[in-house]
Length: 107
Length: 118
Picture 1 (tube, rainbow over the protein chains, first blue to last red):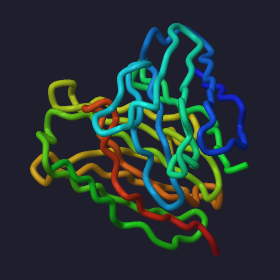
Picture 2 (tube, each protein chain N blue to C red):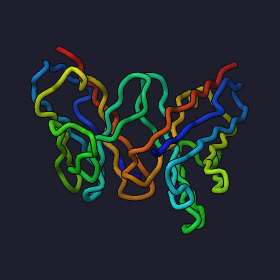
Picture 3 (spheres, each protein chain N blue to C red):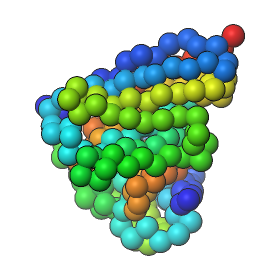
Picture 4 (spheres, chains in turn orange, brown):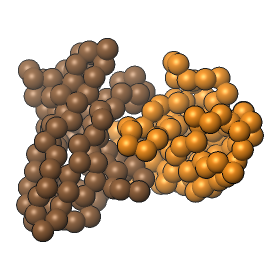
């Protein structure tokens, strides 16, 4: 099975900051990498699919990049509504797996 | 509008069984592979398994952690996917979500809480 490792597990940042979250796959997953945002008590929300495609309705301050085994999610200017937990997910086969999550907190 | 609505969660004793459901609407359910994912309180997302469509013979795949205890099935006439959970353990306590593979996994239900406790 493909293991997904996210870093950092948490970070503190201020409104307006640029932040980057990294996700590493234990083997090549091409571009089959999605990013989700989750807020307390809610289902995960898709932000980015296929490494870099922005899901409809998601603000353009979110972007994704990478390929193969290393991927990043960048928020260019953190907004108050962006404080949440972020997960990467690989979908290169029918067996999905998620990263451990990154909690983005207010500094 | 795509909707997924889970139901059937509740309190069950260790060693017991429970079947949760996910009713779908707003898309061609019979063409869609469906997944189950769970989340224990304060923890991350854990993929449990998938059932493919009739075109793929309803093939199922499971995570190692639940293989042999959990079974995914579907009834396309009811637009519903099921998760049968047997030999439940306290560590199976979680919110259980279904999600649709089509649309890049954008569609999730609201989740149903399963609590395994004596």
